[in-house]
Length: 611
Image (cartoon, rainbow, N blue to C red; front, side, top):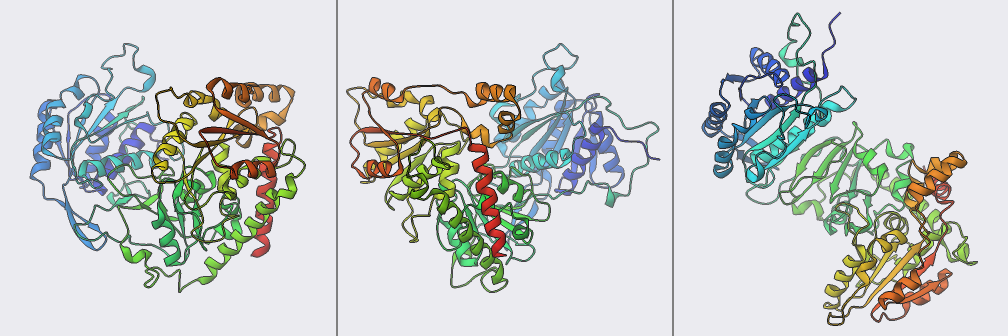
């Protein structure tokens, strides 16, 4: 019976094997204790013929040897679409912790200024030993400053599920940065790898498995460099007819154009710039919960940064789904599920040309698109019924789905030239469900902006104010839809000095006296578990504030109006905006969890009836 390998050895073997698989031929090692897992793995890989190992006792010498190996190596041939592109071949240098890492600094600086792909794998003490006076332990994180293209601090492996996948996903990003695959700016990178004891394999040393079986099985991400000519095409896998397009924040209209040209269903977030059209799937978060529909999906093409939906992330993380990420510019590509097969800077124009579909979606399995369109129509009908005016005619204070009805009322009055700034948390998710219900024409949807880079609630009023100033120069009207905590968090954004230019901005505040977003997450179970659980939830998650928004607005000299029903809200929204105006709507929070689950269940049931 073979001995169980320590997590440090498993991780080191995976990292070294992946270096070899991604084109690293030479690794320079300076001996040390904390780097022992990597030393054992490198010796095994060299014995197996996976790479050439060079050992030097001085880290400064090791760094410059690696630099020379990289400068003298022939380039790697990568493909950007059909175009072969030469990129520099990286060389790795491995050290132990402490001053050993600092001794690489001269070589790293030279690699930085000369654009040489040097990969520094620096072993480190685990986080619990840092700052304790442990031997050979210093702050290695960021030690090379701005001289590296990419730097990451990996936690000590502990054998958890998915750990190797995550380690190799991070290493892939480092290698792409070292070779300049995203920005044509190659250079050094720093991968700081913490290890816990034990740092050696079982004794006696087990024989090495065959070379072809040693690398850990893992879906590796292929990063296509920018082609010298027209934008390259992704090498689509599987049946391209069974493809979805996911449009996250900032995706742009190209996502919708590709979906419609190829005959693919479209899952578009409100701030994607790709909403609407015949292929857009309404209430897609709930639709994705219908396994009978989603199990046929073989491929997803991602535009922008999808951050809004856990069901979308679960889809992107499915091992049986091939994910292609379209990520322009040279920044990090979005792949929170760590499952992307291919990253490309752009698609060729022919992918968005309706006259010449590249995929099989328009001519192949037409039933796939038809099923998703039918699912979208069924979902839209459920949401429409839940948010119709009649459902909230008695007043918003106690009506089910009142927050959804508010979001729909706001969306319904927006024209194609209007701008809507929406706050993170529940407002953007409510808008996600209702946007398009009252805009049947393709070009009628407004532009929606949101701070989804980090999805925080801070600064939203000030962001909307800035958007309103810029939009006014273009003759466009700006509104904002925010929650009460988002509004209170940036109440200072209402302040304008007497010498500052005025702005017209309408801010709709959905006030449920606290953080209802947490009720829709796992924490909501706490509120229903017991009296004590409800009290705990209310204090540390619900956070009721009892603030009087009318008095707050009066203090800032801002107009305030409290509306009690959808009709009054629509009337207020249709009036001209003069200066900054706040429209407050009270909605209940207590039943948010049950209402969310009930609506999702009704959507799922309606979708199943279409299958």
